[in-house]
Image (tube, rainbow, N blue to C red):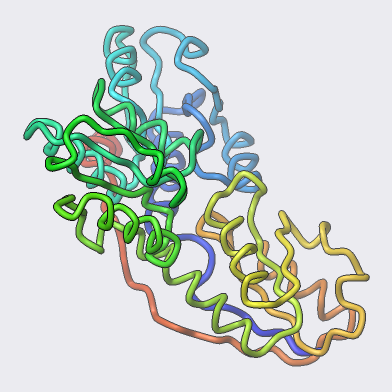
Amino acid sequence: MKIYLANPRGFCAGVDRAIDIVDLSLQTYGSPIYVRHEIVHSRHVVNGLREKGAVFVEELNEVPDGSIVIFSAHGVSKSVWEEARRRDLKIIDATCPLVIKVHNEVNRDYTNNYELILIGHAGHPEVVGTLGQVPDKFHLVSSVEDVDRLQVQSPTHLSYVTQTTLSVDECRDIVEALHRRFPGIKGPHQEDICYATQNRQNAVKELAKFVDVILVIGSPNSSNSTRLKELGERCGKSSFLIDSYKDIQPEWLDGVRAIGIAAGASAPEVLVTEVITYLKGLGAEELEELTVVEEDVEFLLPKELLTAQRSG
């Protein structure tokens, strides 16, 4: 059996930054450091940070007044910011810069009296945070059918944004439907789409040309990891989402001559290494990396956190 390894895979720049922010905050301020929601959608990462002293909470009412709280990479609504300030919480913002860019665009368009549309998945933390940027005139669509049912007040003064973790491919049909219904609709620049999502999906498409089965490493609540698994299936390959090598079922590999490994944007490389070691124990002998693009994106850490560390 031969292993093909997708590249790019695993941590994106936004996830790297978010994890570094929690680590550096613990080093600078000590524990406990409170984190609203999972910093990124990875059980492995969250458990590791919890062991270091991070306390993960669902809502701010679980955080004592005056404490340090970190907002996750997915971003939060304005009401969460307002509550944190009202309670004198020290805020460290780990929101991905690409998400912040979308928030800025939403606020700018709202100020210019646009009626807004968000392409995304209901209930995803990023979607909740983006919808919470403005008080009204915001519609969520997740499918072409949603576009067909859409009722708007200002069909000639509309703009749309997308959940950053959706790829260009995933949005294409919905965007085309929006332009058909509302020819004058204003859209974002393509670079607002998360580069990492598109790159990892392109890597899975490449994997599918060479393998019989695709294993996608990522937690079940990771949207981008789930999309990778679904994409593998659409490419005609048996595809499985696994949290670690322990989830692999031996029957998945019956008769398999080539197996592909991909990893979502919040999956650490150590999990990839463990899966490779496990497969080698089952008889895999060759390993080949399939690279579709080299990533070199880096996001800066918050200035106030770096300043606090230097003065500490």
